[in-house]
Length: 82
Image 1 (spheres, rainbow, N blue to C red):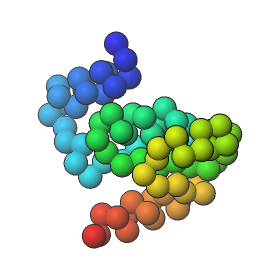
Image 2 (cartoon, rainbow, N blue to C red):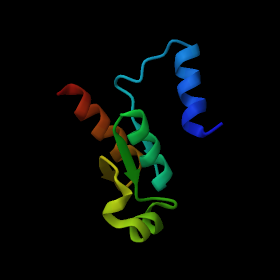
Image 3 (cartoon, rainbow, N blue to C red):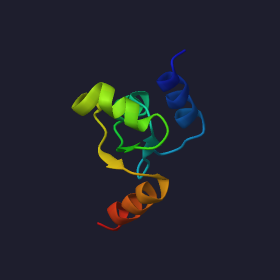
Image 4 (tube, one colour):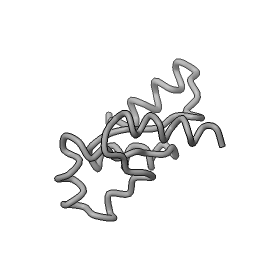
């Protein structure tokens, strides 16, 4: 079972909503997951983030980029106010 299938099963079985959810990560797979779920993604430039950005460039496909987790959290808070 793929990661997306596991997550979709958990959401369904636990009657969760992804509304207002985000995927935050430093790999292309994180942005791919968010896209598959139809939710925004934030690519962190820390950890693997720099290498992934160099490797994939615009194909990374994240909704937003942030230099670190605190910046990502602030962006989420600003986005949820709109």
